[in-house]
Image (cartoon, rainbow, N blue to C red):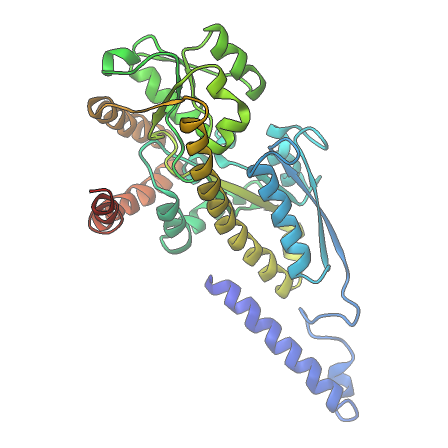
Length: 375
Ligand code: CA
């Protein structure tokens, strides 16, 4: 818990104690008790009605349903004092309009992924996914205990938004390819749907990143308009039917090693909440963040078996020299991107320092154990 959250809880405690004292001693301290202390709960708690706009189609597996679950959780944890109505993409505003909509207060909450807002603030990209960046576990550690959350708040402050992590995909898959990738040369001329920093890395490797909306991916892959596409992981990819367009399924998802989803909140709306409801919203986000990773992990396990055993998908690992080349190019691309403005550089410096420390610790913990388990 953050220090200021604890302060808020303590603040509420003091106010509540004051109110109790007033009830018992109202004859003698009537003047002090005429007005409830600031932050005290009124006799009949008001119900707050919020809108949550999302970047996902309504009920989209895991991402959209994760947004629904977060809204339900806030309702339940607050005893119905906050009601959050969830809107799918284009129901209230378009998927890529949610940031502005919440910033200006058209809706109080937005559920998306921070790399969508690169055009508004480049530094946002570091809070979703960075090629060869942090895993889900590391991302949460950086955000909650490594200074990442404070930086994210700094980046979103000028947009009147309070950010929060609201889920994580875990390590994504490398994608679907219509041919095998046996060496670095095979990346040259490769037309792949791969957004964001990963796309920039592919371009530097000689490939051609292609931007396509979700609806165009399957037909483009099937027709040969593109040679490859990445999407998410086995569960979402299976639901999308990508195995029907091509069979080579590559891993690991070097470009999205633990993509954080976000839920940002209009700052004015958040600050109007009493302290206990603020804490409930923050706590619900923590729970939703953990639940989504668990959901993805469990469902990906099952979906992968189905893809391989029932659908004839051919799993392939990227060759070592291909991954080494992509890693080296990623370091260049990300450092250059960070150098484009001071705030991005500040976030990058924190991110890279945390990543270096994680590499050392995880080499002898997670990585060593996973290797041992597979021997
Ligand atoms: Ca992806």
